Length: 267
Ligand code: SF4
Image (cartoon, rainbow, N blue to C red):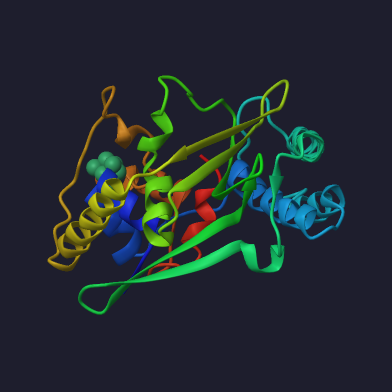
């Protein structure tokens, strides 16, 4: 069995939801415009590092979805997303704070780690490069609101960065956050993950995998702040036995998808 960060984090959020998605095959329909746009934007970023025209690539990739029946958040539209994307790509080039040498090798880097019991863990690292001249592992994020930067060192608690540091053994990590808002902004956030954090994450993975393999899928339900996970859970219809919600949100495709990592760009 191959595990990914998305799988582990879904199990930790709600084991029942994990079972619905990875064992029963209930996946969220690809109707969220922001998620699909995030994939197109990431392809355009790759084009930037390869020396191609990222704006043209963004128009081409996102253009394929011009008439797709997406759900847009309030105030969003196909045009608005593409304009924000172009603005962010231009700003990223002007800032010129990120370098990726040998982009064909150092973008979307696949890393594998063997786990006990014939299992493995896979991650696709967005980039291995330099931020402000310092070598680090880089993760891109596309979001509609800024990441919280205070208190100092908060980023050391980001589980995805800890996961990537664990699988790569690289302590220096960074998030480049593309914030789609009225005045698009890019946050360049960097931190160091300690050896102890990597060890602890390794233990968390092993415990989680063992719970999956022994069939432990209790629901971690919650509808009140701060544990209101059910409110935004795509599997809510299954838990409530509500066919209308199931039809709106889900599609059944048996088996886990090896494209899970694609979900990780957008929040
Ligand atoms: S609706 Fe709640 S209990 Fe059901 S799978 Fe989602 S998070 Fe878990």
